[in-house]
Each structure stands twice: as C-alpha cells, then as structure tokens.
Figure 1 (tube, one colour):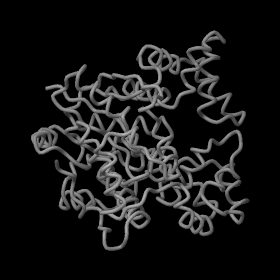
Figure 2 (cartoon, rainbow, N blue to C red; figure 1 turned 180 degrees about the vertical axis):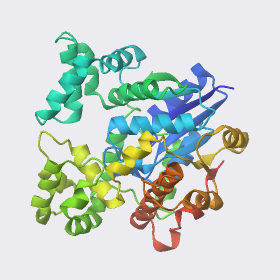
Figure 3 (tube, rainbow, N blue to C red; figure 1 turned 90 degrees about the horizontal axis):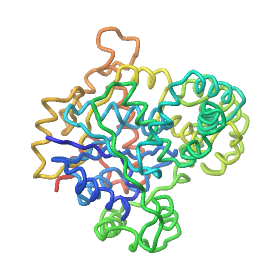
Figure 4 (cartoon, rainbow, N blue to C red; figure 1 turned 135 degrees about the horizontal axis):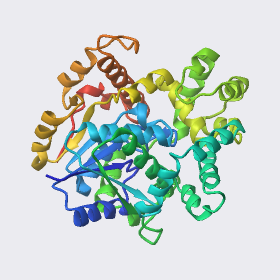
Length: 413
C-alpha cells in the first residue's frame, strides 16, 4: 500500500497547493495521502494566518486523507531543523514510503547534487569559514557550495536563492543521515498568473483587505469567511504578538536568552541593548537586523522566547528522534489509516484527550533523565505545543470559543 506524505504550511491553501495535491494524486497514485502541517507558529517566525485546525480542513477538502501536526519545536526553526523534524515525523508513522514537497527547481537532480556537495570536506570547511565571518547561515551555505565547486557552480548555487529549494536540499540530507525509508519526490511550484499567487502575496492581500477569491479554491474562500463571521476568528500577523513579546523581553535576562534554540551571544546582546526601544514585533526585528542575522532568525528567536524552546532540549529531541503523531483531521473513508498507523508507528498517536494524557504522564522534562529520556522529551515537546495552542487561541478567538487544546477534536470529513 503506497502512502505519500506531503509537507506543507497551507498558510493559506491556494490554487497552486490544490494543483500540487491533484498532481500527486494523478502521477503518484498513492493509496493514501498524509499532509504533515505546520502548527500555529511557522518557520518564517510569525503566527500562522489562521489556526491549524482550519488549515487542516482546507487540506482535507483539497484531497488529503489524513492531516498530522508538525510539532512547534520543529516548525519555529531554521531549514535544517525543520527538515529533520519533518522527516523524522514522517518516518515515525511507520506507513509512509514517499515524501513529497514543492520546490522552485521542480526536479530532484540539482537538489541532490547540492546535498551531495554539502557532505564534502571542502564544503564543511568553507561553511565554517563563512559563518566565522558573521555571514548568515543561508548565505554562508550558498557561498560554501560555490567554493566547493571551485567557483564553477554559480547556476547550481543559485538554486539556493529560493526558500523551497533550500528546504528540499535539507529534506534530502535528512533522509540520507537518518536512513529513513522514504522516497523523495518534488513537484514544481507554479509561476504567478491571474489565478496563481504565492502564500506570502495572499497574506499581504488579506492584510490590506483585498479580495483573494481568484487565487484560492472556493472552499477556502468559504472557510475564510466562516472563520471571520461564524467562528469569530481573525487572521493573525506578526505584530499581533507585540504585547506578549514586549513583556517577555523585559522579563528575560542574558542567561535565559542564551538557552534559546537559535540564539547566539551576539544576537542576545543586541536584543538586550535595544529592548527599551521596542515598539512592535516587526519594527524591533528590523532594528536588530544586521548581516549575520536574517529577519526570519530574529523573529524565530523572539517566538522561541515566548514558547520557551531551548537549544539543549531541541538538540536532544532531534538526536533521540523524538516526536508524536498528533492528528488534526482525517476523512471518514480513511479511518483505517489510523488503525494501520497505530500498529506500525514508532511514536505515540494522539487523537483524543486520553492520548494527550498518556504522553504527558512522562511529565518530568529533565533531558538528563536516564530511565526514559524519549518519553520525557515527548512530554516536554507536547507541553510546548499545548502552550502554543493556548497563546494562539487567546490572540485569535473570543473567550467563549477558546478551548484547552486536548479538548479540541480532530476535523472529520
């Protein structure tokens, strides 16, 4: 039985995403399609436009059979961590054999070549040299590829100008390093047209109150309307976190900042030196920005402060391949998938309240605990996710529509 996993944010789901799912169905003909969906806080370092359960419903309407959540520890992270977490989660299902992702390259060949180059001593030496000069990781990685190719790989290295290509390379590297039995497949992203626009463009249109109905399937337009009216939800943007981030910054000390997953000493210093100049999330990230720190890294670090995502814990989670399979939604006709996954999975399956309790039973988050470090780390990971759920609901929904995260059931179509 062929089971494909598609990694996505769907923030929001648009015509290009729908076409990707249709293509996967038509060309790969999987017996089942699982979407591994980013949660309520995303990789570029901001809250998702709409909550993950609504986006899960969009994915099911687009043709997914089952939607799983990628833990916040892995989504609020740089590309290499995001990819490792996604590959480990897909492999943990025990039933996935194909990993699907969109890319600007639209072909595995250049991405595989770059992934191979990244394993060479020349590349590793050049990468460390570039990082020591204060260059941001994405730029340092791209320059190291050119160095490893002795300057002759300009066209190949230019692939890394595109964010989805960067993620694609990291997926391939993660599959190699983990030994996961996953066959990678990439599909080309469609160019902009009168009915295709990027998710970032659509988020800006929504921010400005523009009509996006030409760029999204009709069910997405309906869900966005329902989200605003019936569900009383509001689209969230980075600056909606301003009050929470401001408070956290005034409370933090250097030791606390140093524990965060992607915080360097230099970045912590810039944050502490400028925190009294905080006027808003976006403007503060712009104020802190220098060549060595990308905007995304700065924003992720601020969200990691809110969610208390620590470097030592995240490293241990990656090393121990810690995850769980949190079900956001499924089709009734695909209910058998849950049974298959329950039997084959190497990680806990979370569907209902009792499943959350089982994971949280290993509540001691000390990563040095010798008896059962994986269960302890999973409990800590879930605790971060549940706090992220509560924070997001506080920002997006009125009090009468908020719920403790375990009480919110999966979407079933």
